[in-house]
Amino acid sequence: MDQSFRGRIFTLYNLLQVQFGGIIFNNPVIAASGTFSTDYEQHFDLSKLGGICSKGLTLHPKTGNKGIRIWETSSGIMNSIGLENKGLELFVKQDLPVLRTIQNKGVRIIVNISGSSRDEYVKLAALLSEEKVDMIELNISCPNVKEGGMLFGRTSRITRELVREVRSVTKIPLLVKLSPNADNIVEIAQCCEEEGADGLSLVNTFPAMVVDVERRRPIFDNVYAGLSGPAIKPIALRMVHEVCQRVNIPVMGIGGICNGRDALEFIMVGATCIQVGTANFIDPSSCQQIVTELYNYLKNEGISSLEEIRGIIK
Amino acid sequence: MARVIFNQQIDNHIYHIKIAGKYKGSMGQFYMLRGWDSYHPILGRPFSIFNLTSQSISFLYKVIGEGTHLLSKLKENDDIRLFGPYGRGFPQAKGKVVLIGGGMGLAPLYFAAQELIKNNSVESIHIYLGFKEKAILVDYFKKVSHKLIIDVGGLISQKVIVDNYDYVFACGPEEMLQAIVKQKKSEKTNIFISLERRMGCGLGACLSCTCQTREGNKLTCKDGPVFPGEDIYFV
Image (cartoon, rainbow over all chains, first blue to last red; front, side, top):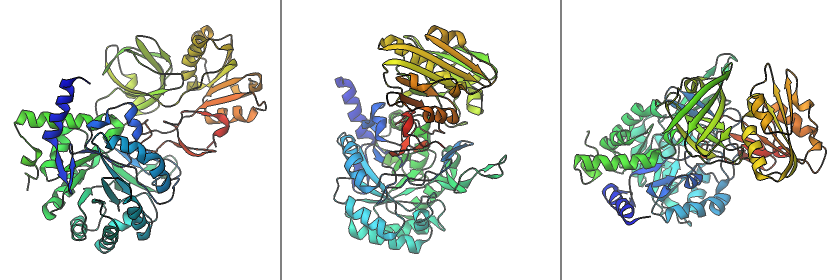
């Protein structure tokens, strides 16, 4: 690496640096859970990312859903993976060491956890607290599992109890990932804040459906699947706006962000960080490109920090 | 961004696209292609490498849905984006090798045959190609094989005796792959099959292309697309 390049990365970091829940991120661009793997390292320079959310982790391994798992729709994709993952033990043994090498380059590691019972979330959070991870993202919004998942993020009473218990067993900064399918997303967000969550990420995918007309049945074995991508961006943006107006903890905006402009929209309605999901499938270097585009925006507008435009839309 | 050198229709719905540039790749690996700027379709399309030279890369595809339809509209000098090479391809082979392709499954085999010849470690290369209605690219495969068997309308898996070979590389419909694996009796025959699954990212992140193997779930894009034949539970 030549000196000028190194210097450029340094300034890029400084301008875009953000604080979120007591943690400094080199930039606000984070790869969303389930859309990024450490294999990207072989093809792209991951050190430019602000952070990486790991794929939804459960206590024990899960084989995931049967049948079709991904389907394209107008400007979006639907997925029904069903939280396939290797379980905590293998994650710690196999994946975490690789994630640490990326963490050593200044990229924040967020571990996304999911459970089919309150007990499972609590155990996961407690066990992960012994590992060197930067943040835990509590997934109470997965639409693709029959037990748990989104059920924990639908009503404020259940969310409140879950966040309270998880909070009591971990000191690691806690992020709660909200479902767009919540009865009242603002109320749920406020519950998370009251129970000590350090931040919120929203939104997860929208429960959605597609029918195979020839065979006269749903495409997905689970009937419903989660919709993501540019198709959901305007709705996600409205939800992030609503929540940002009503809570004091920082928010990571998620929903169809594909470029720097999309990211700026979320920041202008109040998001501190943004997560990029579907765009990683369109172009695996999307996150890096968004970082560059945000940097260029600040330079061109003569703005010294994202703080100047954050939440500018009331 | 890369440039299309040509995008030729070689048969009904079947195209051969050649793209300028210096690309990497080993036999059986694939690239994700995007020949459009919009989000519709949102995902790139995975195609295994058909041919690779020092100045170009080419792929074969059949127009099936919107993605391949848009690809087929590309003209000389149009822009296209490629991501790759992804996946784990065919291993280096020794001794007698047979390549078996069913329909569009022939695509990775032309490149594989060239690589095997270059590698110099194989005794002979036999190629068996099966087609539903009409044979294509016969001249290409003639040049890279010691023996070429073409079948139209039948089952190519019944024409070949896999136990006669040290290595079998196969790509095509799942029924064909299954029949090939089933046929094997000899311990010394190594069968490698290239699978096709609905893919999202191509890089092992989205977990859409899971296939069931004797060692549990594997990802077609990252652990494959080429797997030892006996490892796969066919769908």
